Image 1: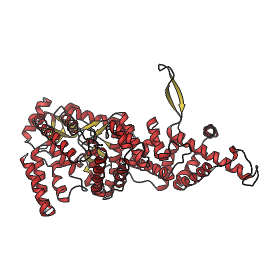
Image 2: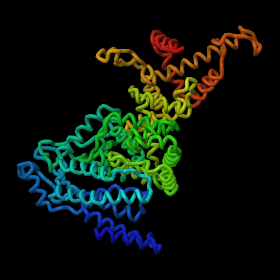
Image 3: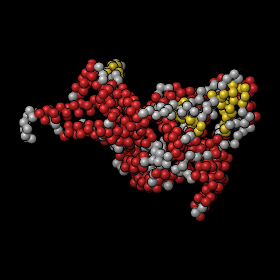
Image 4: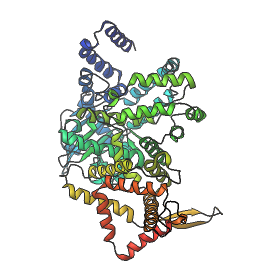
Length: 598
């Protein structure tokens, strides 16, 4: 504790004397040493900060990087004793050869390279002795400081209702879970099974575990050749950052189990251009309701549909339920929309007016009380995406983690058939007009949606040689056409008697939206054509039936169609060609659907 206070005092003195930059290298070394002495919990905090080029100076980044793999090792003799005690066999009976010293030393354990008897090369991770007591003490100290820190934040008027003790408890639960390597093995295997059901199955994986030689404190997995992601070439980093982002969004919003320790040492680029994610000890689970709520929230922000945002914040746990009215009746949404807009421009926190952000939240707090809290689960999400953003920023100073979410969100909006995603798709395409009978799609949003879907499709190919542009357009068209022309789904509906279930055939949300828009365009075109034929007189005031009279909505629908076609260009034409190539019976089926809408 005294060392921490002393370090803080030195920083304060440097600031007062204008020596922050001059003394940064020395202070960075002191901080790295301090975190190492404080133990595993604090080492992990330093690891998360070590790639945040937008938050720390180069001197601190360089020094903290040593925490990634250069934590002091414990003696190999102790590691051998742990292996033999855990597996019940002598080291020489298990391995033909094993490195005499660890090849990597991390906060909770260290790794040796070995070869099984008559088997492949493997990585053997051995847990540090006495970790249960060390982690328990670290968490106890953090918990002791949590109460005073929360009080200090409230006195300072930060506007945060964060349950800091709850955050530490959730974090601590994850750390304790990391101490059981059997659970880590299961986490990695579960990820491999889940990702196999997604388009990313060929570009990302976790190392297979050798269960026979694994236990609670020893984990043996197949050796993976590769280079750390942030050390790869610039072109590779850009593509693999997209793969990593889509993978983490898939975990967060689809499979429900998020890898929560993605420091650069855990992300490898393999020689065949795939992404390997190591170290599955720290994960967090999220339920399905959260998945849909978050996608809806992202759709609302991207589309500028801010009216549902207060309810989103309550559903996601950022605002207490009794504060929703204050959010609705305040300028909170405008402040958050401004922050979101700044972050979308890229550059991480360096691209955000942080002083303006805190001034805005301070003003909201003064007027409405403490409105915000950070739910405990969000710590893991923030940590994972902060690391991914840091890797992206190290390659591209304008990297935008918000924009990188669009490909995955676009893919889910276009392919998911659940009611919640249907609402999100409607928000994304129509914005605040989604409930208006005369709503019109925004061509720019359609362009963003298809471009995002194309980016996701591209990421799913990994580092394979890029296709010619014409082939990329053709592949994208085929996928969109398949989504539009696929069979309707069976939906289960409850009847008046809750015990009775009936099945009905319904279009997917995407098909439903397209059919509505086609009906508008066909109706508008027919009325305009009949009107132009002059059957009811050419004078503007000639009486004519409403059904044959184009109105402002018709004109807007046709105008919107032209703008969409201009935006989508070759994709739209190829889609029409694909439709014309269908058998006559299937074309009639599509026409019948449109007719029903009319």
